[in-house]
Length: 181
Image (cartoon, rainbow, N blue to C red; front, side, top):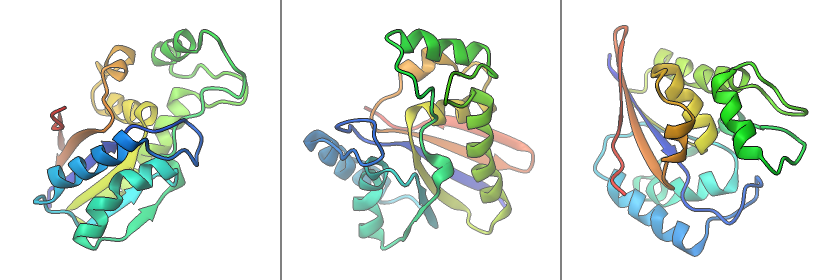
């Protein structure tokens, strides 16, 4: 059976903490996202437990009466517990050296492993169409798992929200950006 996984980056948010809400514009984007998804077949929704991710998919979940399951493996990757004024340079370095790890953070490979586990579990279950809602950094690492050319420069081009479709059939896969911003 083919598997179709919609990978969604959350809408515009007020901040990066786990309890950061969507902005006023982010709530408008969430409604637009719901309209974009409404006619698509969806069996299951799995979201990061961060408020901005949940708020992103809530209009669609309520319209379709689908429960939102929370999975902490979809939270954003932790670059470091130390503040870096040059954090963009530090982040870029982790796209090159995938095992590079800063104090209190996780390497790209460690973060990638946890989101890939979620996808592998989806492949094994009976649901044909699943939505996951997560964050730009962790989604970029997932996209890099399927397309080694997806790196730091592509991460910088992600929008809020953004939507990719991962289609898996037999041993083949196809990943495509489907959001039109």
